[in-house]
Image (cartoon, rainbow, N blue to C red; front, side, top):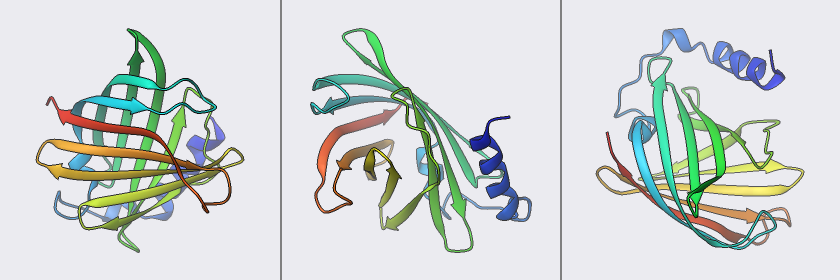
Length: 171
């Protein structure tokens, strides 16, 4: 079994997930659950040329609503250019979420990205030897969400927009 999988399993056990029972009003994970299509604007970066992409996001709740498992696929010019697998975990001890992000560009997390919720927005900052990436999720209206990805290569002193996407629920 992969080391990251064991880390995630340990995290679930440490959080005593079997004793929690959250409802949709208790955390933002339920807002992301479902099937989504997205339109994205990609900035030129060291990972590729800028342009537009369309995406499909499939997200499902697990562990009685305390985890969200998300599969993401983005296409540019009719070809898949990025896939990702994300696991969001609600941490009842401090009413926050953590993000584990894996993608086809080679990102493998060594630790979860802590989330900070502010009203209808939730921010996660992933850190790796490549730098930092900030995910900002917001929910401007029912059945829509917005995701802004920004990267920093100087320890968070400056941020550069990498992707700006808007997603609509399809089911």
